[in-house]
Length: 511
Image (cartoon, rainbow, N blue to C red; front, top):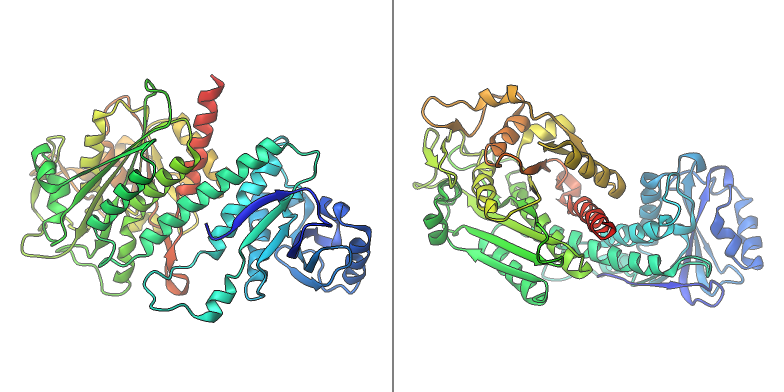
């Protein structure tokens, strides 16, 4: 964790560098202001009279030496319209607070923003949910990748000087929920930022072997709940994973199949299976990608990184669930032994696949992982992958694509996405799309024509899910990382999956 988090019920005597509170538009006060000492309220009102802040969303005003506070600064954050101040707006307000503090040298803050009433927040857990979101948001905003830098710029270090955040929670609020929110917020934030760290590493460092080593190290750290096996290429050969191994043939790096089993639930509990694509670098193979932006193909393992992030968060949170996580990991490079367009491979399921495009390799490693997962009597299977550029064209970078054979599962995932701010959009998985994968020489082709590319990719994967198994596929090609000047992994969909799993754990406990 970048920060330490705590709860306190006394504003006046809480020593800090800065107090943060919100203000609605037209300078409508929020609940937090009522808790300020009288002298601090008078000071704040006198400064607001100048009109330097109207309360528009993401506006900020940094004040100094407010009387009655044991702090050097008072940061006022614009929250916009009270009637439209929902969780999306709250996250923006929180992010603007962290941005305003960067470069100031502030180390300790007292955060009153969770007291700002959010539209449609749950009555009993609303405050706790905001505390949890504040931690996730803060850690996200302050994260920076420095693993490959020889030294840290002192100016960059000053920008992340923040070290402690204390939440002011009045005495009459439920403390059990708040302390649980602290723990959950820290766990999810660690999972997200670990997923980002793994994905941001370059392909020459984050190889399939490195990813496997990281997985085994995590299992050792949480050996009471977590077990990890790593299958080598000879073991995969014995299992008949011809699709997965065909992808790794063009690389000097051996493929790995990483298998976690998290045992936090009852022994008879059916597991949730998570499968994440772990392509640590994708040059496209013989169907070589264009040179421009090929460096971003180190992010083709974001699905696998997200799975590792979820497992880490689960282990820290100790949710009472049974979860199996599988990460097929490889590189996809051109070589004399690499897949060629027109090659036919046999998957672990026994189905044959004609490879028309070697750059459609993610589905080849995922299909064998999905078949392998059938040895677990899973209640639900969810796979995630930076699978298709077509999904980016369809949905941009705001939403992940969701495909599912079960409406109830789909609705639960969509709801978790809405709650966590890690949103998805459901796309069809109709039978009419399946003929696009027809092959004259094998059971199926690995690609269809240019139309509906993300849908036909999901159709391909659906052929490796047994009848009756609840399954969802998440195409995170547009949401898992950002390009350009803001290049970097986002850690999605860790937040959504953790929200979904927390809801499942709560539901199980209520039975």
